Image 1 (cartoon, rainbow, N blue to C red):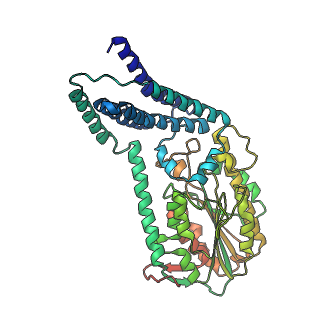
Image 2 (cartoon, rainbow, N blue to C red; image 1 turned 90 degrees about the horizontal axis):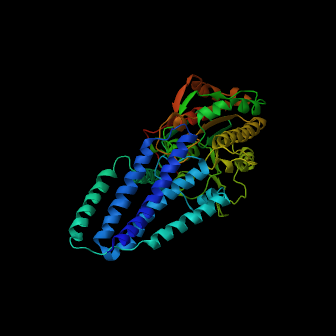
Image 3 (spheres, rainbow, N blue to C red; image 1 turned 90 degrees about the vertical axis):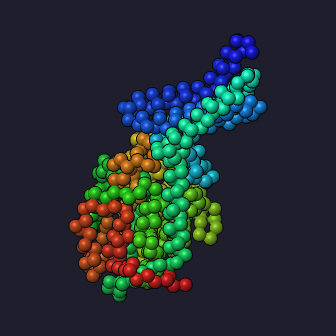
Length: 489
């Protein structure tokens, strides 16, 4: 092969493999400039260790070893490389930051319904840039020409292929992109097995009801992705919107999330020590309600549905088709839950346990509150927290005006890093420190139930793994998990 032709082919391959590298380096520099250099260097290491070693290394030398598969092998390995860079670029275009975890975990944690909600916020210019990006990839792949096979190539490229294969094995453990995806999947599979076992066996524990003759309404509002720092920064907004309350909410000042994924937190709440709390409350004579603004499907949402399907009243909203327990709504704001909550309050049952599952501050933030005009992601997040305050105020107003023996617990399932909503594995304060408070109505304080709730007055520190015990304290019931009963059929 002439020197000019070889240089041309090398340059085409370089363009194919170096373009994503240059894109990610540029994004990293820009992200650091916008966020004071706070992006972990580990992110860039995970990207390059995966992309260079697995794609540009093993993929390329595999292609050279098996020359008749050269172009398909180069195309496949380069596609993975380009796809990873594309995910980072889209993240930057929407959040002005880059994800610190495997973006594939986020992708696999969704369904078409979730994706539709996410894609609604993608501007037309991003779609146009995406088309150009993949057109450039197609041109680069098309321009690549296979090299002529030279004597000794088999041994030479075989050794290099084996070397990079070994590097793949040694570098893709611990904190690599792929290892994080595997870790997420294993945790999901373990949780799924625990839930299936508890639901199948219907364990409820021995139930004792304090002051059984007393009517009561217990409300649990479960927030989403609200961190305590931003909530406290907007506490004046919350206090203004709830100024009508006769009794002020009591905050638990140092509440933390045990997990940073909703399904795990809901599991701790509804199946503490693998006991079915909803079934236990039914045994205690409560009518149970689950009102959710989340989806009916998706990896984690499927688990939440499995946790809640034995509720007496089960209503899911937010882009779900009309079907038995699921209802269609054109609005994805949390105010869609106000009317169903009012109906639950008016239910004639003497004892009620009502869960209201908010979509809160889940990314994309501008999809969580109406009339969004904020440009910067931090401002969008704060606006979503203030909108949650509005919804909580409406819930509290309805609960107070109902004049029932009512108690309410609010907490966020976990926090988030507002500037980096794709992060899942971090345990920095913004991820795990959450707002939590409870509220007691005037009639409630005049009943024997108040004695049970007084035990919460001294609680200064707790985690979301203990929410079931707080609910029990407000409800005036005890569930002895040492004596397990089968759920009544």
